[in-house]
Image 1: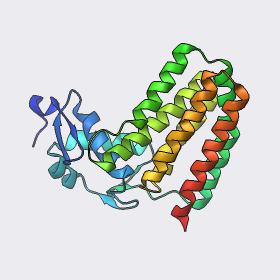
Image 2 (image 1 turned 180 degrees about the vertical axis):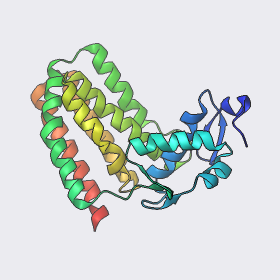
Image 3 (image 1 turned 45 degrees about the vertical axis):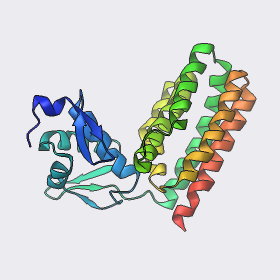
Length: 233
């Protein structure tokens, strides 16, 4: 159906696959498709048909295309002229290794800088972000997983922001690393173990201890790499 004022007042319910009430229809459509990509309901490399999404989400073509355009910018969707959209393939083992090498070069040092510059306001922002990952709202595991992936990306981006180096922050953000690595494996271990590692990072920030923050971040990234390596077996 067409996107009317009533439909624009609906919000996303990815668990049911339909868009219900929202202040921003495009945002809700984006979140619904994002959840399907992150949880592998839309398989990597598979074709994404706009008409199918129109029927599934019960919205018009316009918000679907706008959401797919945003996902294309994040590297999760590819568009081919005269063919249409498809989900991006999984990253290769080589790309995986390169991403983690980049993270290990940049993020531990940035965490140390952030710890040296930490204050109560910044710490509260990071604790709120980490708390959002720990909340297990709703029954839909796929939705919770996609929410965790987004919150994890925000948590790490905030640390880069507080390290006060815009170039490092922009370099990591441009890779959309967290979206691609979380799409490798839909598994609760990926999220549960990360929560404990985040707490170690927060403890170092609370103590304003650059050395501990650097070590905690390095350990977290190395463990993240090890958790996801089986995806290539």
